[in-house]
Amino acid sequence: MDILLQPWPWYVSGPLFSVVMLLLVYFGKTFGMSSNLRTLCSIAGGAKYADFFKFDWKAQRWNLTVVLGAIIGGYIAVTFLSDGSTMNLNEQTITDLEAFGFSGIGDNLLPDEIYSWEAVLSAKGMVIIIIAGFLVGFGTRYAGGCTSGHAITGLSNLQLPSLLAVFGFFIGGLVMTHLLLPLIFR
Image 1: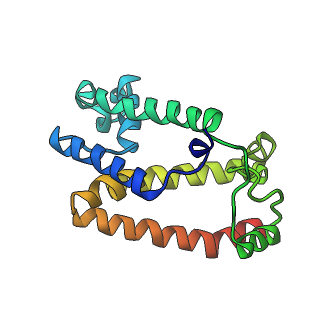
Image 2 (image 1 turned 90 degrees about the horizontal axis):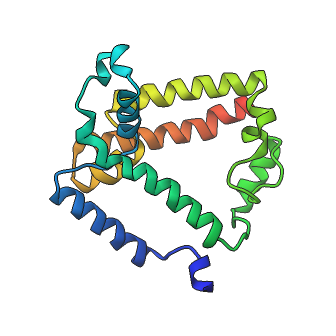
């Protein structure tokens, strides 16, 4: 049982990703999480408000299993396959985060200073959530997909637009980490 409580090595998880991608290519499907949001909005009647949601969502029903699998898989991983140990982070990362006012770094995946209800429901938290939600939604729509869709499906299919999108994601992440986060949390 101890082996299950450790991260899977690349030589196990990598080939599993490859098998999933081969199956998707074989069946003419693509992987991505943002398309599920479009499907859910269409099911909920979003077509009344925007033409973007006017499509045959029933043809995309299969992709909703990705959401269900992510929820169930996450639950199983946290509940049954986790030993509760803290993350092993680089000392410089810990020092940098402490300078921003974070505490308990590595104890959990989501820092309380950002993700507790108290932080989210504050004026600063609401502004961050609204702006971040807009940027993620706009970026996903503008890029024609999300990070998982481009980085996993697009790159495995050797699509140039996905390569450009992934470059953009990484550049955006670096800008956020090194320029914007210091401004927000100092």
